[in-house]
Each structure stands twice: as structure tokens, then as C-alpha cells.
Length: 550
Image (cartoon, rainbow, N blue to C red; front, top):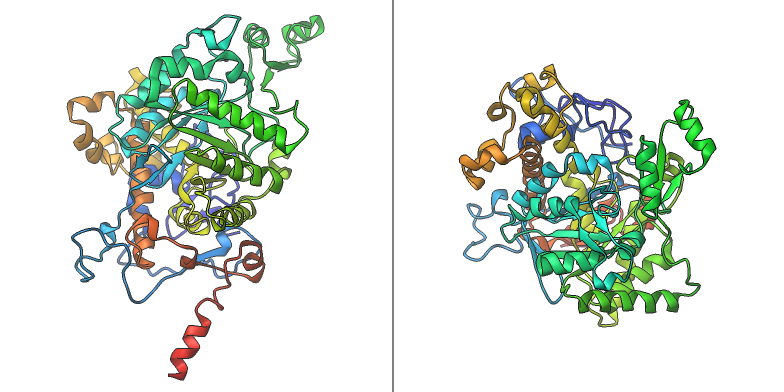
């Protein structure tokens, strides 16, 4: 395990048990700090370096790599050369500095979607965490210039949405205020980089979400089909604590457990022995028994979405086995989709069954290694392979580099779920503490700043390292409309971007499309076997011996 509960070098501490990603197993919105991602949301790129400069030396504690994980991959550095220099740059050392590394990239087939850095959010759907902190996620993502994904069931769980029975093609949805709020919040600050992506599951398809988005927003949105996720294999879930709301969700067509319409359940709720209800989505493709049936249905779905106006269509799949992985890559390639997000086990936004997260599906590094292998088989046949995004336990800049390298040249960006939600939490808490009149609106949990924040500063301008970068981007007058969670997100992204630039410069790569599998090596033999990435002692060993013999 690379991450321990506290990191003396950075001065960070995990409240709970750290995972492979460096985040706590249970990340709380009211947390007072201070894991690496939490503190990075305040101080930004400063956290790339050891603390107490001038009176310390620091040494890495990651000398032993045990097991197969992204933390058992290491990044290759080179002592000569420079690749992918920007136009107008020479290979002079004055040009080849890490701030000159370009993180801009793009994905898509017929229509290219530009991004300022190779990052996207996970699907933030009907969970109340996503709803409460949406403005921070959406506005922050738009300012950064990355795709933000609206997850499943947003329309279905919205009490104010109006859905009538009938044919979805004739427009079942007449009103969807929560979905509109989410889309409009992103588009207000969208400047040509990034995208807002709307995801569809079984219930969304039945309710006519795609038709509604196509009619109201046209090509401003990307539509995403969903096969699954890395947290669970039974569809989306939320928890509600109101009997009335539980019955509303059941009437909307969702699975609600326990059934709020049963007299014994009502009685148990009224007497306090049942305190909450779980709302579940449905499994897809249950009426299909063969790969050919799935393929035909998938192609029909893509063709239909194009017919109603979507020029950009993506697919999200979860940590199923190898057959489903091959289907996702091949079908998405054949359908000329714009992106395929492959999510390894196992994280979630608060309502995934714990032991399911622990036990189901393929771990991220294994899944992503096979994705590269399968994509390469298609490319060898001359097919134009769908652009890939890898997800599953990423939070730091080295995770981005390693995952991009592992899937190169097919990976175009990396998807972060829990990691990018932390700045939304901490920023909102700070805003609520500093501006009590806005505490309820931003869902702040603090009545006053904790000492962990006061050590950084006592005003937004002191606390957030990127405050004035955001102000420069939107203007001083507009800053009053920017949630502190969005500023925190921007600050975290700046740290990730700077760290990624440094790693790329060390690998002598100055453009995203220059990253390759030769830029990483395995820290143990088992990881080398599973990933196909050679062991660090084997990489360039033959060329090294030629030098010795020369």
C-alpha cells in the first residue's frame, strides 16, 4: 500500500483509512481535513513539494511495490531528448521547461471535443451529494475546460419534473427543472473547451430524457449510453428518508426497498423501526441472451440517438468481465462513438452496497490493461478504435500520467469521481463559514473555519491559491456568482495540471499525444505479467549493454 494514514512530508492526514487512490474509504462532505486532495483544493500546486523548505530534507517511502495496482507502476525518466515541442519552440533548454508542456487534448470522431487537460468528472447523477454540490462541480469543470457528466436518474427523482405516459418520441417530459439547472450551470461558463454529457439508463430511456435534451439543447450536449459502473453491477441507487418521497419514486416506476406501499412497511416506518428506503434502477439487456442480440440493440440505440440530433455519443461501461469489455470496445468502435469510459472497481458516491464494492468486478489496472490489448487487436486490423477514458480510483497527477501511458495511444483523458468532489465539499464549507447567510444555499457544514483552514488563511482570497486566476478568467464583478467549491475545484485542477506537466517534462514529452507505454515500467514482476509493462530492470537493458560494449 503506497498510502499511509498520515504523510509527514506533505503535512497531510487521512481522517479514515486511505485507499489505493489516496482518498479515505469513506469521504465525508463535512470533513475538516486534511488528506492530500482536501489540502490541494486550498493551496494548489504548493502541495507538490515537501513542507518546511529550508529546514528539511525528504525521502520517498515507496521503495517496495507489493501486488498489482497503479501504485506498482513507476514513471520512466530520460536524460536526453525532447518530443512534441509546440510550434515555435526549439530544443533549447530555455524552451524545454515544464510550464511549456501542453495538456490540451481532444476526443471524438466526426466532431472533436477540445479539453484543456486530460480530465473529466465521473457521472454525478441522482445522489443528493451531486445535487447539493452541483454548482461547484459544474462551474468548476467549465472554468477548467473539462467534460462534466450528469449521471443517471436526475429527471426521474426530481419531484418538480413533469413526465406523462405515452410514446417517448412524442415528448413524455414537459418539464425537468433539475436537469436544466445542471446543464445551464455548466453552459453559462463554457468557453469552447470541455462538454456537458448527459447519461441515460433504463429509466431515463423510458422517460424520454434523450428526446427532451435533444429538443431543448440540441448539439450543446453529448449523450451517453450507460452499461454500468465500477461501484456496483445492479444499477443506480439512492437512499430517501421520507415515506411520501419513497412512494413518489415507486409511482415513478423505480424499485423501492422496502416497498412503501405495503401496510406493514408503513406501520414500521411510523413506529421508527424502518427509517429509510433504497431506490434502485433496473438491469439493462435482460431480454437478450447472445452477443449478437446485444450488438443489434446497441447499434439501433446509437442510430436512433443520431436520428434525433446527437452528433456526439459516448458509452460508459463498468468492471464486468472480458467478454463485456470486448463488446464495449468493438461495438463503440463500429458505431463510431466519440468516447468509451471504462470504469474499474470500486468506488461510488454513497449508496453502493459495501461488500459489492469490495468483491465484484475487475480491478482497474487489470481491466485497463486488457482494454489496451483489445484496442490494439482492433487497431492491427486497421480499425479506427474509439477514444478511451479510464476511470477507477484516480486522484493524483501521477495516476493521470500512468493511466494515460498504460492505455496509449487510445486513452485521451482520465475520469475522476470521488477525487474531484472533495473540493466541492471543502469549498462549500468554507463559503458557509465565511458567509453565514449563504450557508444553507451552498450546503455548508461549518459554523466557523476549523484550524486546518485557518492555518492557510481567513478569507477566500487568502485560502484559495487560484482565487485570482479565477477572477482573471471571469472578471471581478462575476466572482460573486462563483461558488467557493468551484474555486477549490479550479485550485485542485491547477495542482494536478502542474504536477502532470512536471512528470511529462521529466519523460521529455511536451504534448499529450506523445505519452506512450514506454514512459512507465513495472515495480514488480507480477505487475509486469498482468499489464504487459516491462519490469524497471528490464526496460532498455539491451541498449544499456550496447553502450557498455561500445
